[in-house]
Length: 437
Image (cartoon, rainbow, N blue to C red; front, side, top):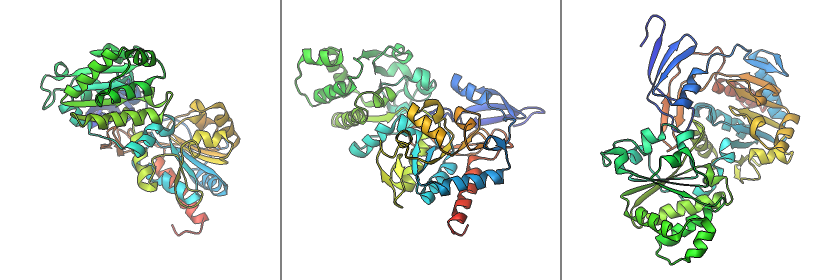
């Protein structure tokens, strides 16, 4: 719908976080979004702060250059590398992610996503244990016991409560919040804990022990009360009460975040949580879902898995994919000074990688694709200013529950899309290798 000065877009999709809310109403004036109705505080900041960057679409060695020059230089860097790295993808649309994985295949690169520094341990655990899963729609309609473990959606995913987990009046939960029990397990008191019915403040780094205590209680084993309290900081009677509630639930849900995956134990913690979920299905219906952060990091895992068989940290140096987190993940490849060129897509490793990894990235030639200026893009050998995914580009993203969601552009950008840039780089790489384009 359009007025004389304002275009109104119904059912726009916010790609800031893994909730990917698809009910946003955008009011667009020219190249600015003036209103984002129904968006949370993070979504509003995402939409309202995005305009068109008045900068060249391509910089080579810090100097303005044509896109064609940028494509040629980028392909030259990647083709001449002995150990190239392709990293990022979590803020790109699936259509661009497919091309990035193809580039990694052509040049024998390590392909890694931002999953490796957040829910990478979950990806490893899924392969070892499996996942009892469901959509967020099922949670909204059926979930009567909601447990958040090491997650703080009140701050990281502000609409999660109202759209999916606590507040919705569902088919089998007609009274919404009144029909649900919310449990929070964390090492600190968060805003999410303030909204809970039961809060378990466990000792730091005791998640693994706490999960196995619950697994033992699910199996009806007797435990020593003193050992349980020493290990977790919580009395055995409280754990037993929680297990009784879990067994009595009609539809239980475990949401877990980086407070579980990136503490001591990492993938072993997630394996224990997934195994607990499996155990609970001997008593009632229980499912488990990770709280994913970036808007399309779930899509990145899916696309890399489609193309390689593995979700992240995949090496193509031998001409076929190999998976080994800690060896082929981006921060490790850089920290060991192994990567000699990189293609960085829609992320900012210069702002959050280890000191060793950042120093190596600064030493090697690399290409950056980003809709804004970042510490990474400002030091890139070839820097492409690209259109913002989900704001200037239409395509597909995956919600945190693995459901694909379409996104539609709010307004056009003079800069190319990351898919366009990547396709042009791929065509030049194939030409360099004598492959018909």
